[in-house]
Every structure is written in C-alpha cells, then in structure tokens.
Length: 131
Image 1: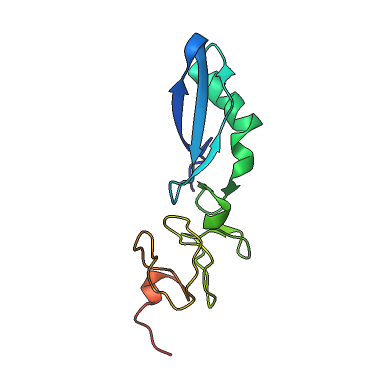
Image 2: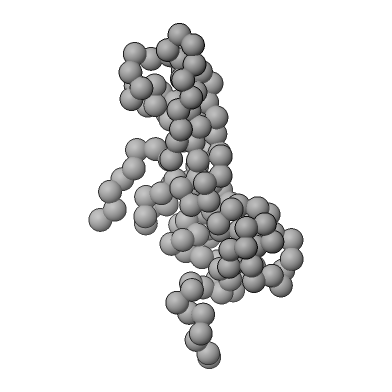
C-alpha cells in the first residue's frame, strides 16, 4: 500500500517577522504549480498545513494509485491517474510527461524542450511488442 503524502513537494521561503511563503511543485515534472501568500504561524508545520489547505491543494490532482500530487498536465483525466501510472494510450499526449510543456508536433517521439521520450501508445515495457 502506498504511504499517503500530506502535500506536494515544496520549498519554504522565510520572510520578515516569521512569515513564510510556500512554493508547491508537481511530483512528476517539478513544475511550479502554486506560490502562496505570506503565512504567519508559530511553527513551520503549522504554516505548511495552512498554506496547503488554503491554497496549495487546489492546484493539484492526486493520483489514487501512487499518491503523488501532480499538475493537470501530468494527469490522465480519462484514467483518473497520473501519467506515470496511466500513460496516454493510442492518443497523442498534449503535454510532455516530464517537463509539462505543451506539445505541438503530433509525430514527435521526444519532447522538443527536455528531450524526454514521449509515452504514446502505452508504457515503455510495450515498446518492442508487435501485433
């Protein structure tokens, strides 16, 4: 069973007077999805909980299979799973599964921005299969 994460990946930026700003990132692509307003709390854990509940969680989809928090570009809405758990099958992806950039060339096998192999037609294990 997958251990549930409480939040997406994040970084804390400390400000004056004990205020903190949180930056939340996609667990697959690393894309910055949310920057919170300054939050004042006695402890960092308390500030994190406030930041996540009021702003962060709404910028993500959570994969029920692996538990990761991902951007909408990294979520297969038809399968209701992240792209690592449910790659697009028999359809061209609109976004790169690695960096999140919008793809324009329907015949590309690799992302023009980051060079990642695009997952089209199933998972990498099926790559050499013939039918």
